[in-house]
Structure formats: C-alpha cells, structure tokens
Image (cartoon, rainbow over all chains, first blue to last red):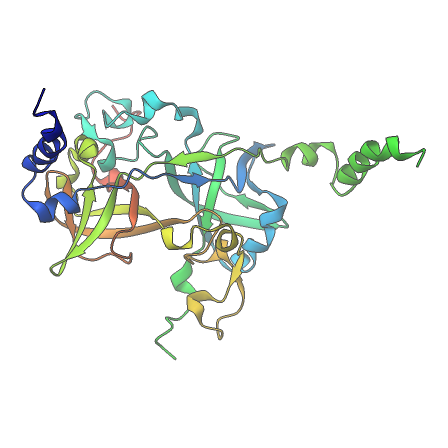
Length: 161
Length: 161
C-alpha cells in the first residue's frame, strides 16, 4: 500500500506507453465534447410531391436559393438514433452480404456514429418556407438539418476583385 | 380584466389564422427536438501535412476506405458555435459586400443554424486511425463528425443481384 501514491504516475506511463511518442500522444487526443443540432425543418411527402418544409423562422435563410437548380440537403437518420446503432462501425453495404464487410466511413450507410445524411436534390420550386424537390432518398418526416446551395456557381472568391 | 380567461383561445386563433388551413398547419409544424453529435476525430495540420486523426475507437470504421481516392469529410465550424452566430440567416457570400445579401442555405457560409461543413479531400494514405489528405478547407483542430467514401463506385444496389 505504501506505493499507492505512485499510481497516478503509473497511469500516465501506461497511457503514453501505447503511443508512438509524446507528439502523437497529443495528436491522438480527441476532446470528449459534444455539439447540438436543432432541426430547421423536415421532409414531407404528400400527394405525389416531395417537399422540404422549413420552420417559418428559418425562411430568410432561403433568400437567393431560387437561382439554384439543385440544393444539398443534410438530414438526420432519426430512426437509427439509439446508442446501439450509433456504435455500429462495420456493415455489408446496402445490406447485401455479397458486399464485403466495410467500415461505415467508407460507405453512405444510415447507421454510423453521427447520423448525418447528405444528398443532392433538384429544385422544382420555392414558395415561402417550402421547397419542392424532384425526389429525395429520405423517409417522410425526416428531420432536415441544413441546406447548401450550389455556391461556386454564383459567387466570386473574395481575392478576385 | 373579466375577459382575460379568453386570452389562450385568442392566441390559438391568432396562431392558426396566419396559416393556409389545417393541412398546411400540420405540415408546417416542426418538432422542437434536438440531436447530439459526438466528434469522431479532428483535423491536424503539422509539418506540412494535413491529417484526419480519428479517435482510436472509431478505427474499425475505416475498413475499406483505402480503396477510395477521396473522402467526403463532415466537420463542425466550432469557432462559430454561439447562439448569436447560429441565429445569422443572411450573409454577403465570402464576406464580400459586392456579393448580394444571401440566405445562408444558398451558400456554404461558416455561419448557419447547424454548423455542418462538408468538403471532399483527396486521400494520400491511411495508417491505423490517421488519414493523410492532400488539403482541407478547415482550421487545424476542427472537430470531425463523419466521413463518407465514394460509395457508388464500389457497391452494387441491393436490387441488382
């Protein structure tokens, strides 16, 4: 028991021992933080139409999007938002066991640690807070997190005056 | 004061009155929920190299990514994670006032309600939990949320047996 005060030092040595040196040890430290997403809208499929319906308060964020032919839609795979599914790191892509077991980061699988989905949609029309798109590979009701227009088509870099 | 008990009813009527009918009223209701992101790694720029360093526990998720020439990197604009900046809905793209005021959803601005950044990076090498990429438009230390390989190049759809 008399060496118990050395335990913290031993733990530090153990922690560093597994790494390739102090530089990599620091490099490999990932902060255990977290960030919060607030949905800006949702996917609505009704009467044969596919809509991105934004919360009214976000409507000013659409200004200018009517000039774009498509929009990148970021949504949340909300049906998989359980600790168990978010811990899955390897899948058979497309659920086909003929496809070899693959890391989720090499795929677009809907199970992954952060359930971010990214897809491009052709814009049909924009009316107030509602964007009609041609189609989307998301379920009705999926929470929408972000939209990104086809930026580089419209704006010049700040250094090209 | 005697009609004060009618105030809740009046508020409901006022709220419904602005909509285009019960169908749209329901359609426009966005659930006030939230989702949690846990960084899987971070951007590291050191000695002229650009690295995506994953938390060791996510390393199995990289299996197969070595077959891809590029990877879509999703990261967090963490320097803008304040309620004030996340409330900005219109910007002059690229901070250039010659570009007209534009909704953030028509741009790739680093201020937006959900601070999700999406960029494609050419892969140079993958060693254990570290991906060396050619370049990335992110600050050193940016939290990485997700990686997506060039899926459609490698896997057949499940309905094409």
